[in-house]
Amino acid sequence: MRNLLQNKWFKFSIVLIVYLLWVLWVGSWWLLILVPVIFDVYISRRVHWAFWKKKGVKKQTKAVEWIDALIFAVVAATLIRIFIFEAYTIPTSSMEKSMLVGDYLFVSKVAYGPKLPNTPLAVPFTHHTLPFTQSTKAYSELIQWPYKRIAGTSEIKRNDIIVFNFPTGDTVIIGNENPDYYSQLRTNARNYQRAEQSQGVDMTFEEAKTKVRDLMKQRFEIISRPVDKRENYIKRGVGMPGDTLVLREGQLYVNGQLADEVENLQYDYIVRTNGVPLNRTKLKDDIGISLEDIRMISTSEYNFPLTAEMVEKLKAYPNVTEIERVHDSGINPDIFPFSPDYPWNIDNFGPLYVPKKGDQVELTLETLPLYERIIGTYEQNKLEVKDSVIYVNGQPADRYTFKMNYYWMMGDNRHRSADSRFWGFVPEDHVVGKAYFIWLSLDKDKSFLSKIRWNRMFRFVQ
Image 1 (cartoon, rainbow, N blue to C red):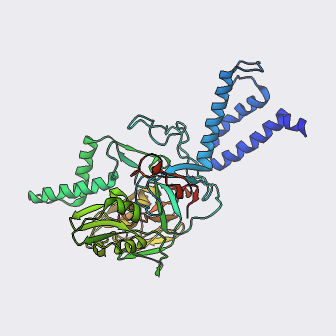
Image 2 (cartoon, rainbow, N blue to C red):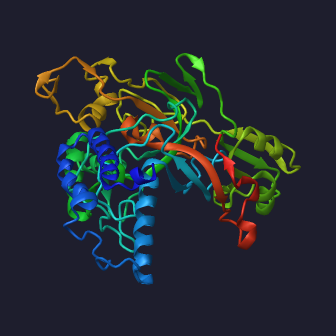
Image 3 (tube, one colour):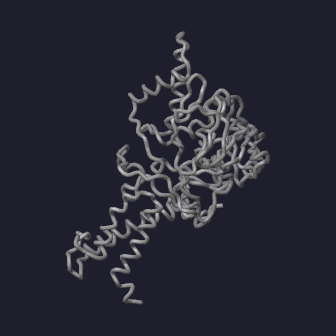
């Protein structure tokens, strides 16, 4: 048995089989050109691939040993990052109080199945930009692989906390990334349209968008990014493929049923006092409100994001006279699908169908705003409207069959989360993994050892 394991043909056969299975999964047959390299490494040994080593020398120098160890560490860490788990930091308060700013966690790639990187040629341990630069790409698009995913240990379930590539992060304004490019385009187009109309110029919103798009190209450096090199977002998956969602007064309904409220869900509240100001330190330490979330409207009025438990604690304060939940009203033009046919806002929208692979949807000029980005961008069809007729790939279409599953993501901090309500559906090929384990948590409002939230360390994400 020992002799067999040391046999070069046995080693070559095992490596070749594993490599061929990987090539089959990737579906890129040009990778077979590396088979001769594998043969040479194990059998013929004509080429000195480990060029940093002296050929024929059994005892290498310490420097060579360090190079060997470094190469192994980089390769192993890269494979672990792609196929097993990846480190992630919570940067914003959109998921509070379930996930806190300063939480450091591991995201499981195995849970939903690791996906093949779209851009495999990249600098190790980077995402989309080289360190100490603002716009220098850390990857090459010379090789681009299609979407592939290995089966995971579980399916995506409603209310899972999911990390995904930002869907509208395909186009980025360098140095001005937030809000996203499309939000800035719509806002600037509305302002431009109003300014032109005030001067007596008759201009449609689409005409204003075209003009503003050209102006933005002239003023900013605008780049595109492949799916796997877009910013990572973390939200809760509240809508699964095939679901129909309705949000009424901030309460979510799924398929006609009141959705299960997750623990620590937050909404904005107006808190009024008798004129005696609230102590910021007590609000932070006793109630759990982060300092950046303390908004003072007047000497006797505040605005806070609060959970139900936090509301009850505040009611016990002697100087608090009233606590009133904020309700969004009217039409918000920044809410998906950005159409006057859908007068929705952050507390009230729907009904909205979440697309499921293989399902069909009726295509009309009214329903098109809901699914045009799916059809034209995510599923890469040529979408046109001519004389009120919808064309998909040059053919008139009154129905469309979805090629992928889609998800609807929302933050637990419902009034302070930029989520699907602002940019729409998340395609399955954008899903990175499941938030799994918090290994460190640091409070940015505190200093030194007091920054560490000891009670949140080494906890599994629920």
